[in-house]
Image (tube, rainbow, N blue to C red; front, side, top):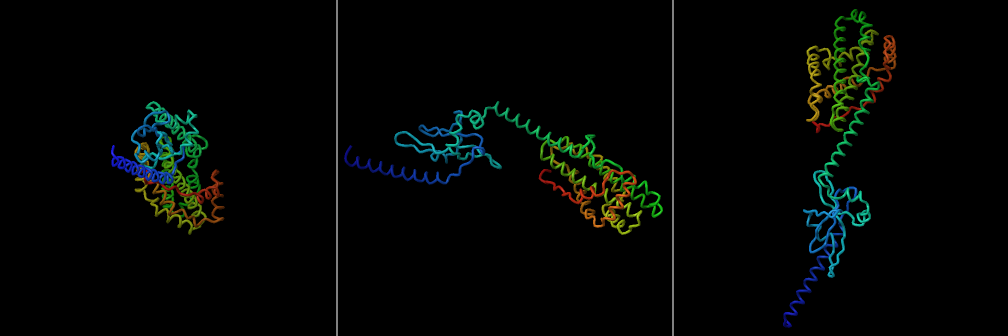
Length: 364
């Protein structure tokens, strides 16, 4: 080799060293900006195995492919004596619509490498392990769902007879029967309208009971929450109708004409005295059981229309502007006369404190 070739070789070596030094500095700057994820945020953890190139392996030593090349040089520094320093490992993190490899601190992982359970959790799963894990998760999901369902059913059916407790009783019909003669003397047509209100209340009861029964068939927590929300809205609207209906009878027989016509006008707006509309509603309600069983496609249109009816009822008669201490006293006395277990103040308080459940339209 001549002197020229020697100098040329040295210049090339020097240039290579400079470029390499510059590249290492760039890598160092990038490493300082790395944001590490916590170990509990990732599933599989992989480490760089440094030979002629970088091979990524999980904590059991199984090779993992298709790792972003971005992390190849960033993950380690290789020295001239064939030694190297590893800076971080990678963990598979789940995001909203994807999974991505993210850096995790090497020291945190190294501290747990004697923990067999940690290694098993954060290594690539075999098909058998995946199936076992899925079965376990499904079992836990079903157990949680059954427990939630059981708690809700007990909340709504305290005595466990299969009927929603709040709709038990026949107070409106008993009060109507008691004052039938007085009402006929005032206006016979009112008796017919009260009978239609009674039918409306009965349809509401049927509606509530059918939704209650459908809760037993819900397949996940989201559906369960939606059905329970709609059911509670229905119970609330039933309480409102019952409370107003009872007050309408009492106000009529007690000659409180203003209160009577306030309630009567609101009921008229809700079509409660329209027999054709009542028949249409009854027909819809008779088919609700079949509709509710088709829960694989989300909540049925009928469920939404039922909830919409409840919202209309609350909007129209939810104000209770006519309620006074005197009106409550009169209603309580009338209920006592028919041996009702219904407590006026408790009913009124539950109505006034209830917050309507908002339906999530995305589940449709």
